[in-house]
Structures are given as structure tokens and as C-alpha cells.
Amino acid sequence: MRSNELDDILREALRQEVAERSSALAGLQEHVVAELGDRRPRLRLSDWFRQLVAPSRGGRIGQVCVVGGTAAVCLLFGFFVATRLAPDPGAPALRLSPSRNPDGTQEVVFVLPALNATNVSVVGTFNSWEPTALSDEDQDGIWMASIPLPPGRYEYAFVIDGRWWGQDPLADEYVRSFGEYSSVRYVGRGGDGA
Amino acid sequence: MIGSRIRGGALLCTLFLVGTGLLAAAEIALSDFARAIQSIPVSDIQRVLTAIESGLAQEDFPAPQTLQWIERLAASPFSAQEKESLLLHTVIALENGLPVDGLVTKGLEGLARAVGAPKIEQSLKQRLILLGETRDLLIAKGIFSVAPGSPQAVATALPTPRFNLLVTHISGTVADYLEGGGSPFEGETLYREVRSRLLSLEGAILVPEDVDLALKRIEPADLTRMALCAVT
Amino acid sequence: MYRGQDEVSLLRCSLAGETEAWGEIISRYKDAVFGLCVGFLRNRADAEDITHDAFIRAYVNLRRYDLERRFSTWLFTIAANLCRNRLRYHRNHPVVELPDQIRGGPDPATVVAREDRHAHVREALTHIPYGYRAPLVLRFYNDLSYREIADILAIPEGTVKTRIHRGKAMLKQRLEECDAS
Image (cartoon, each protein chain N blue to C red):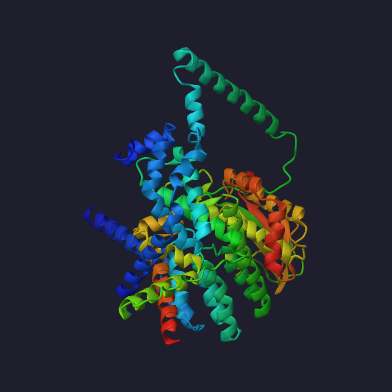
């Protein structure tokens, strides 16, 4: 069967099917109109606001009062929230704060004490589970790597001399995957992805 | 003076050409996938390529990771049948317009951990079911997706990439929970897990309004129903 | 009163709460929406319900419609989303309608053959997955462009083309199997 022939048959078959069944639509508009009754289309949030500051409500002075009052409430609320959330200047910095790169990625530091290891790497969703090497340049047994990551959720594990280890103490959470643990970090949440 | 200008111009041209070449190399084409798939091999290559092609047309398709998945699958020690069966989950997801990020990264992890094909198969199968169930659930709850740039039909219509992120992370949470031995009947626990995951990503990659919308409409019983579909 | 009015005027009247104007919109689009629903759902009762619901929902949300864009695309999107919702609800209880019986009588062989063909196409369409069936219906019943279909189903235009191609291939295969048996 040629493609054009199939197109025509399909078109005719669908049209015929609807034509045969269109008696079901008898009275549809009357039923819908009756059901709608006195209803009007729902207002959007912007419509509500526009109505609120409509000139008919007290004229220009009314508009200024409504807009000004709303702005003042927002400012007060923002001030209240900001003072509640401001960091305590006396609290010591306990976490490694990641630096933000111009391209929006954050430098996420992976750290692992592995005193007798000769080879440590990290594998995860950010490198398609291919090893990225950690280094221990000062030979103190603390292995580190800093990887720029865009905001998101990343599962990973360390590979220490060929053995996978998935319970990083610095992880945000852990998951079980194929019967083993993987660690999880969230980057970009609240500006702190460490 | 003129000589230095010519040298500078030549350097700029060279840099431009190299940059363009690198850019061209960075863009993955269907032919790259075709080459990778041919070394598996699969019984219906056209079907796979059609699915990949539809994926490439989407802005949030993880092309590099998907290509890596196929290449590493091809190089794995599994039988041809096992490789094709594993690939099929990605194909079916693409055919149904489902986001494949979770499937691809889980497949890559399975290969990297050197677990057997049956274990990877089990994980991918469950995740594929959950992707479909999650999408259906969101739609049933009145949360739809619209192509970016399209007119928004109703207030709860999200651009497709944002909708897909919800699908990926809700289904991924349930999958991780089940894989970790969680009971599908613990709907409240499932809901807490989903809530925690979405809130952790809120503001980072998930729009707060989308998170709010999903958490308001999904109920623990919905997640139990989804989880049961995946385990039975 | 509203019969000869242009669509934009009808929509403006509807926005102002004139439901009779909306009734005129319904009369102009009911076949198109019903056809979409029949094609998507393959069940007449559901198609009737969803057609009714689509017009209710569209009216209630009419303020979200941008008058500068094509109204039919917006309306069909609502109907398509409602169909998808209903299909999900029915997934565990599939309702398959049998093709209509061909009336007996001394019809010319070619007419009977053509009706047979239509019945087979309708039967075959029921067995094609929704993801492939929906673009076929929008293309061959509603006569929409790939761009419009992409907007309604929220999939890329490229995907629409490949799904139509593959949907037709599935249809053709089923028809050829029918012919062979």
C-alpha cells in the first residue's frame, strides 16, 4: 500500500467514524451553556490586583494608598525575615564553603582520609562513573579534589585502590544502589553545596 | 607594525577555527549514535535511531551521557541479547517522551560497579515503570507539560523541561527507596522521601512553584500505588 | 444573535460572561474536539464526556487564553490533556470498542471493500499506542500542522514527524496482517 493511499484511507476512516457517532453531540452546546449558568471565566491573580487598584476605587489617591501600603508591608516583612535569617557572626565556620564560578558552577571539594592508600578517586553521576583522581600532594594521607559542578543532585562513591566506598562523612545523604551505599551531595541549595 | 597585525589576525582566525571545530566536535550527532549502536548490535537499529533522533530534538536530552551509555554497553562483557535488552529501556522511554537521565546514569553506574546484566536490568525496568507512572500521576493531578514557547493552556502547565525534572526526581526517589529495601505500603514514608528530595533541589534546579504544586497535589496513597506498580 | 459573528468577538463576549456566545463557539468546534477525543480514546462514551468537560474547562479558564494566538490549538490542548487523564484512569480497565458491523445488502464489491478497509483501520488504530495514535488523529482528522501538533501534545516537532511515520508503519503492518489472514 502506498503512503498516500494509507493517508487517504486513514482520513476517511476517522471522518466516517466521527460522522457516525456525532448524534452523541446533539444538544451539547445547550447542556454546556445550561451548566455554566451565570458563571464567568475565572480571574487570574493579575486581574485581581488590577481590580484592586482600579481607578474606580477612590481615584488616584486610592491607587497610591493601596500600592504604597502593599509596598510598605512587603518591606517590613522582608526586614523581619532578613533579621531572623542573618548568620550569627560569632559562630565558627564549620563547613567548607564552596566558591562560585562565573559560569554558575560551584567548586565542590571531595576529601577523604586514606592513610595507606596509593590510589584514590571519586566516581559519580557528575563524571558518568568514570574515576576522577584525588591527590595527596603533601603525603599526609588526606586525599582531595575540587570539582566544578552545576547546581543539582549528585550520587558518588570513592574508589580506594580499586575498592568502592560509598559512605562519605561529608555527604548530604546516602542511598543504596545495587546493594551498596552511594553518597549524595546537593549543589546550589541555599548557596552552600559543601 | 603591519606584520604584527597580520600575525594577530592569523592567530585570531586560527583560534576561531579551532574553537568552531571543538564546538562541532562537542555537538553529538545521530551518526555518532549510529556508530555506537552498530557495535552492540541490535535487531531493529532503525527503531533505536528513531528514538534517539526524537531525544536529540529535545532541549533537555542528555546526549553525551546517553552516547557514553551505549558505547560502554557495547564494550561490556554481556551477551548481545543482554545488551539489547538493557538498551531497550532507554529506547522505550524515549519513544514515550519520558526523560532518560535517571535510566542512563543508573545504567552507567551498573557497568562501572561491574554488577551483572540481570541486576542492571531489574533496576532499569523498575525505573522505567516509575517514570511512566509518575508522569501519569502528575497529569492525573492536573499538572501538565507544554512545549517551551507554547501558549500555556492552564495555570498548571509547565514547560516540558521543568515537568521532566519533576518526573525524574519523584520517580528516582521512589526507585531509590524501593531499591534500598523500603516497603511500597509505607506511603507516608515515601511522601516524606519525595518531599525531602524536592525541597533539597528547590531553588537549585527545581522551580519553587513547581515543587509546591507537586507536593500539594500528590498524596501518600498515590506513591504507594506507583510503588506497587513497580514491584508487581 | 451570535451566529455570524467572528471568533474574536465571540470570545470577547464569552469573557464578559455571555455564555450564549460560548455556545456558538461550541457549535463551531464540537465536531473537531469530539473527533479528537474519539480518535484518542477509542471509546464513544468517554469521548462524549471529555468533549463536554473540555468546553467547560476552556470557558472557566478563558482568561488564560491569549487572544493573539490560535484558539483551536489552545482548545485542542485542553481536550488532549483531559483525554490523557482519562486514558490513565482507564488503563487497568481497557474498553475496546468493536468495529461497527457492515450493513448487509447488495452493495457493490468495491464499496464493501472500502467500508471493510475503514473498519480495519479503525480497529487497527485502537491497538496502536497512544503516543503514536494521538499525532495521527491530529494530523489526519484535525488536519493540523506538525508545529500545531507539537504544541498540543507538548513534544518537539521532530518527534511529531517520527511518531507519525512510525504510527503509519504500525498501521500499515496491521492492515497487511489483516489482508493476509
